[in-house]
Amino acid sequence: MGEIPRPHLKELIPFAIFNERPRLILPDLAEAFYDFGNSPFPMKITSATYVKGVTELEDTPSTTFPEFAFIGRSNVGKSSLINMLTEKKGLASVSQKPGHTRLINFFLINKKWHLVDLPGYGFAKASKKDREKFQAFVSDFILNRENLRGVFQLIDSRHEPQRSDLEFTHWLIASQVPFILLFTKQDKAKVNIAKQNQATYLEAISELCHNLPQVIACSSKDGSGRKEILSLIEE
Ligand SMILES: Nc1nc2c(ncn2[C@@H]2O[C@H](COP(=O)(O)OP(=O)(O)OP(=O)(O)O)[C@@H](O)[C@H]2O)c(=O)[nH]1
Ligand SMILES: [Mg+2]
Image (cartoon, rainbow, N blue to C red; front, side):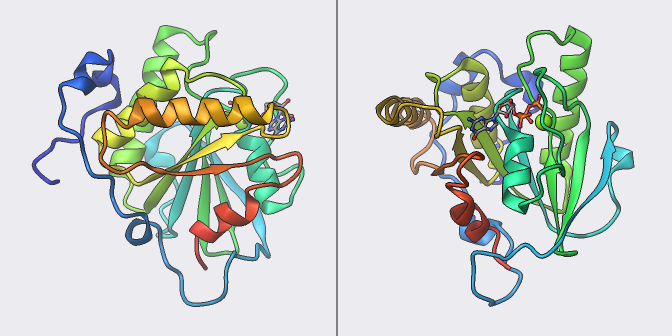
């Protein structure tokens, strides 16, 4: 897929741009997500610590730990999910006010890999300048960060496909970034509606790629999806 340019996040709106692109084959996740060894999984998390929060790429940790990034619309439940995965309630701060997390936060897991909490996209209240800064940062990070193995995009299972979510997935596909979709807040959603929303979402994506991305339904309240997510990040 080397001949297909990896577009900058900012260049990808509106949808028409995607529709003119060829349907792509998504990268093989098993190859993309890092294999740490042969121990049985799902991974057991024995330690999880906050490393730092940064706003500039040059401040990101210079370590070579493999990294997995979590991203989604503001309020989708990123911080809650990080706490759920690590079984540490106060590790990532859970916000009442949408758009709370404005830093790229790095967490060190098992002293072996970084979990990266990217700022929420689509926050309505952010200024244009803030949004552009966020897009440039996230774009640079996802496209150029050598340590990055894959991206988990979080989508609220209670809602019909939202434009900002779809645009971001489209961008991941067009950029050939390995990613998984996590449909969050399953405990809050009606089962049928969550299923329908997920199906509609995948239908919308199928115009762009030959194979569909892997999907995991999860809830930070009841811990569902935890095993599946940690199985992807093998240890
Ligand atoms: N019922 C339920 N509520 C959840 C779940 N995940 C998150 N929430 C709630 O949703 C709100 C937002 O959660 P956060 O984890 O702060 O979301 P975030 O994506 O980190 O938000 P920003 O940092 O602002 O972008 C909080 O009130 C959480 O308690 C879930 O799985 N189930
Ligand atoms: Mg957060």
